[in-house]
Length: 193
Image (cartoon, rainbow, N blue to C red; front, side, top):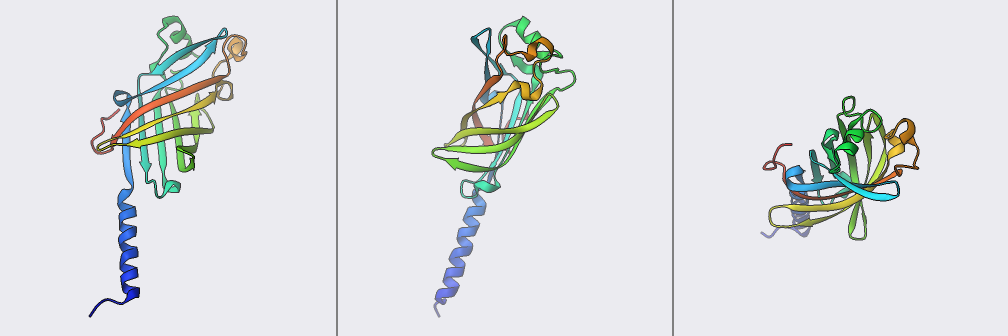
């Protein structure tokens, strides 16, 4: 006897739910599989740096973006602008104070779509201060990895980055642009940070 229409509909619904659940995946990246750069201004001229040590974890299902999660950890001592004097100041007590605050962390739960981009509204903890931060990014899947490319802007003074004379924007600008281009792989095979 053929299953009733109601039973067939219920089975189809269960199959769809199983497919949806199966699409949720955990992805990871670190400094060996991407770049995390920052751009700021000094005396009116832009300079670029990058972080040499970081770890990223993305839990994502495009059908359930409200359940997505993004976690980023950055080793602040790894900030490198290719200028030894400037890097020493950045690592020091007036800026990143890496001895006291060795890491920065960003955590976001739930994404929203904005055109081609995804938008994560999360919390950044930098130099012991936690404040909201919006990160925009695009995801490009391939056969074995996920490319994650995006940006954000951090207002350094909101986090106390720049103490004393450096609290003025006359020498160092307040906004710092952060750009990233990552190749994420399934968390089970990603390299450890």
